Image 1 (cartoon, rainbow, N blue to C red):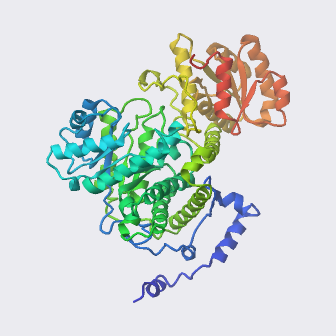
Image 2 (tube, helix red, strand yellow):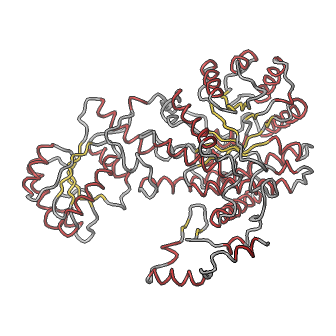
Image 3 (cartoon, rainbow, N blue to C red):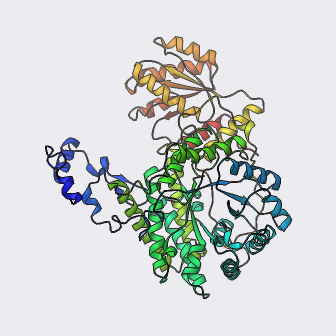
Length: 632
């Protein structure tokens, strides 16, 4: 029986409901409210997300009926299981420590490891780095090399030293000159040299190590610079096409190039969007490679590596990073990544230790062994919501890719600053949203652990800015979105470490019980983000009692917490009496009583804290008033 005919007979007592009927009911329930403003999500990616989707919304999506291992490979390249490669990234360049960390990771279940080989220049060093690691069974990625041709030669020599054929070696080199250009502001040597090296690497692996991928498009850098998902994917695809085009022009076929490339994308906290982004990446790769007339379908099958995002990770409340990487790793697995790296929760402030590395690895093991995410290929397929997100992301990223091509290609767009400027605009909006708490980072700009200190735990010290030679092109600035908040709070810790009293905030609660409690909670979160001490109380029915308690607390900041209706009377009274006993106190009102703000300012109220406040700027202003400055 036809499945559609069969489905029509299910639950016949429930008649079908048309979209028009749903819409009429929704509009009725909105009672005149704006449908677009209330229910339609205006994404940073440039497209709208509707409040619901139905089966009819799949009809215009050309790829929605595709099967796994079938063009355009939106559902991945696998046909039996979603068995991705568990990769552990090894931090640090010390050979002995890196080798130990890699061997421990492999013993605990890692199937691939990534090394930083910046300082590896001899076979002896590489041999020590890979000592005890079966490179015929474990995939190796070598990153940060100063010379990838040399690194490849050393790896070939190491394989021969172990009497292994190049056919058996699998893994990748992190050769990506476009990312180098973006992050350093210039080519390593020259643009021509970059493609000379790419030609040499490809020629060599075709003869000696045919299963080694030699170009890695590091799309996660765009995310780390503050891009949207569409920008990350669009610019990544443009970079990939730049490599394909450049090597095809040197006489290689796409079937020789494409299987020896991989793409590394971030997996961030926007769960369903991230799943859709990975699915969209496969579609766009297939569409691009198709233009080069491939003779093998494998050329259109992208090898996709996903790494949990760096940009949203924090120094404060660092164990929350574990929760973030859990959802991010799940999104990567459900999105059919071919390999996944979960970053340790503590990489933001120290070199990850054995505990954090083990936890990061165990997260992936749980995905497979306990959550069984490896059992089903593309479980999101057919979801009206995710299929539509996939289509929207793919369409907008494709439009961005076409714009890049019209401007001369990715390298020309980097030279002109088009890529950097576009991402910078996105970054500014994202950082403004963090500062205003439109975007929440738990433990940093909302719900801080006010008793936590991190200054004594930092071992990754930022390098002091040195005088730099001007770069040829604008750089892509990689950062984490909470760095401003973290530096502000660290400044408070440094201030205390110099022998100063910890700044304190006294919550002067009075009047309406519900409003004063709500605003006291708001003020606690607000000033806690700067690391200030919060002095709370049950509230005062007699103003004089509150004045005495505030004076006894000797707090630098007094926050009056009440209702807007009561502020007109109580705020001037509190301000007048506080100033008699504590002339230097900063008196603040929690709320936005706009009709009487000017009057209250005239009565000595310094500031008003509310949902519209730019939290980062406001707290930095309080620090300045209290003499808490940036490190000299």
